[in-house]
Amino acid sequence: MPYAGPWNRRLAAHLLRRAGFGGSPADVDRFASMSPQSAVDALIRFPDTGSLVARPVLQDPPVPPVGMYRGLQGGMAADPAMADTRRAFQMENNRIRRANLIAMQTWWLERMIATTAPLQEKMTLFWHGHFTSSPEKGTTAQELLMQNLLFREYALGNVRDLTMHVAQDPAMLRYLDNNVNVKAHPNENFARELMELFTLGIGNYSEQDIRESARAFTGWTFRRNPDGTGFFLDNERQHDDGVKTFLGQSGRFTGADVVNIIFGQPAAARFFAAKLLAFFVYEDPEPQLVDQVAALLRKNNFEVRPVMSIVLRSNVFFSDRAYRALVKSPVEFVVGTHQLFGVTDVLPVELATLRQMGQVLFYPPNVKGWDGGAAWLNSQTILTRENFANGVAQNPKVMAGATWLDPAMRSMDPHQVAMTLTGTMLQNDVSPAALAQLIAHLGGSGQAALAQLSPENVDERVRSAAYLTMAMPAYQLA
Image 1 (cartoon, rainbow, N blue to C red):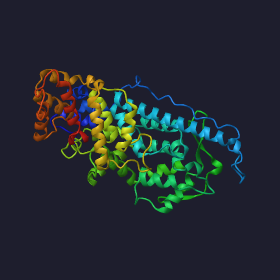
Image 2 (tube, one colour):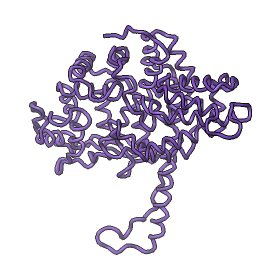
Image 3 (tube, helix red, strand yellow):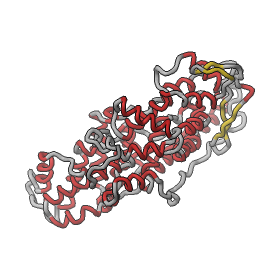
Image 4 (tube, rainbow, N blue to C red):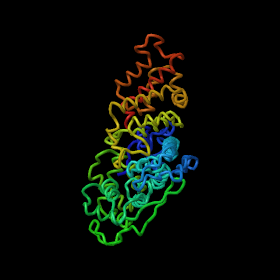
């Protein structure tokens, strides 16, 4: 059922946290001034993002010197004269790979912060954690970037078509070894993960289905361009064109046939429905709710946009159970904080901070992606979040962008400052005891000199109060 209850800043902020990263206080005010229907429309219909940097500048991979590997094959002794050349090449290759990864991570974070289409970036992040790939196995930054652009193109597009493109994506072909899947020696890695983690889930296929679908994907490989990008290649000479029996159907199937057969299974719609609900609404959604969203996916031929349009307008999305029910991922925590304080640039140290929090963009921990949820919070990652929040609060440039704090700071009123902080940052989702402690801190409790707020101490004290607010439980939750 569509949501028909009251509409206010609190629920507008909830929508922006889930369908984006939180936004600025001005964004929350703007969405609160709309109707709920118009607010969802503004997110679902992506505005033009042409003013954003379309892609980062990446360095081409180095070209191996001629004869660099001479003497390393056929059991011959290594050529000592080439040892230094090989080391120098590897060092340069590693330097370029690191520089490119940093450039991509910085570019994407700054794009998430600045975008006028937050749901597009949020869906790109969703697909990035679902169809995982990484720089392992020699995948280039250029190939990972092209995959990221693919996720953005299909952010709310057709998930069956996206799956087909992912199956032919150079980064995925290498990451899950389908580039070495040939008829003489079928490699089952991609075929297994396609069903287990990407489309159906365990229990909805057999080991025989894996073997047969691996045969269908034989010959799907890629070639790499000099600039590090790759392109799909269907090597028919390495394709097993024999009859396969897959999920109860038989034929001379190709990889495309396998994808289409998968999306004909009822389990596929339920699988994606559960994933979308767990990411955008709440974890462990009820089976009945999953079935309802699965029916929407099938009705809309696996087009995600109309499904998300209904989900984001629903009573369940705005229910008490859904409100602040999800833990912010490290990326959501960092990007949302940037938006809150109006800071567009990402510092290099923040990439290391995200690593310590447990999330490295373009480098998921394994093919399952990030566990998410409560796994984001432990003693180490909470400390890292608090250190990041303190660094933000102590940065003069950061606080200069928080113009929403100016009236409260001029008031010299601890209560007004505390209400501004908790109202803007937490939508007043703060306990009376925590609010009282914040007011006491602002009023100088426990401080010998200049206890009352004054022009001499207001800046420092509001900074520390902003940090304390970011350390509160509600700020960790989306």
